[in-house]
Image 1 (cartoon, rainbow, N blue to C red):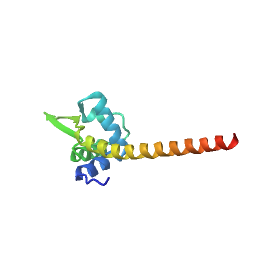
Image 2: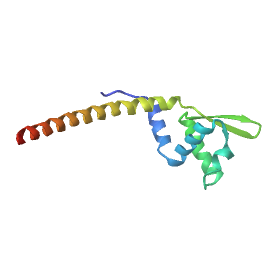
Image 3: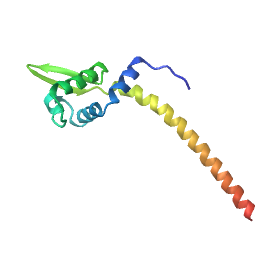
Image 4: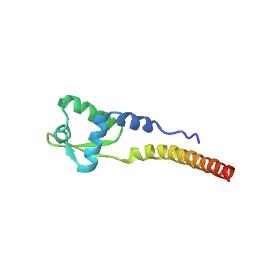
Amino acid sequence: MVKHYSEQLDHTFFALSDPTRRAIIGNLASKGTCTVLELAEPFKMSLPAISKHLKLLESAKLVSRERKGRTHYLKLCAEPMSEASEWLGAYSRFWNRQLDSLEKYLKSKQGEEKHGRD
């Protein structure tokens, strides 16, 4: 089950490890393209602090920026998250198999107990 993933996966998980950055991703997913000020609005932090989060999301290729005059527009780039989803999916399948095995075992033990009482 060992599969080597790209460095992009590390960047993606690191970028998503912070609740502020996850909220920014969520806002972009629901609203589409937003300005920096629109993204900063719900947070009680300075604009430079938000900018640091946005730069990290950009370096992880989860957000792209377009500049029109003095206004910066950001939009979600979800493609890097597909590798993260694939990676998590492998472990999801693993745990589903484990839980299926546990269920079979418990049912067999339950059946043994039932037959022991008859």
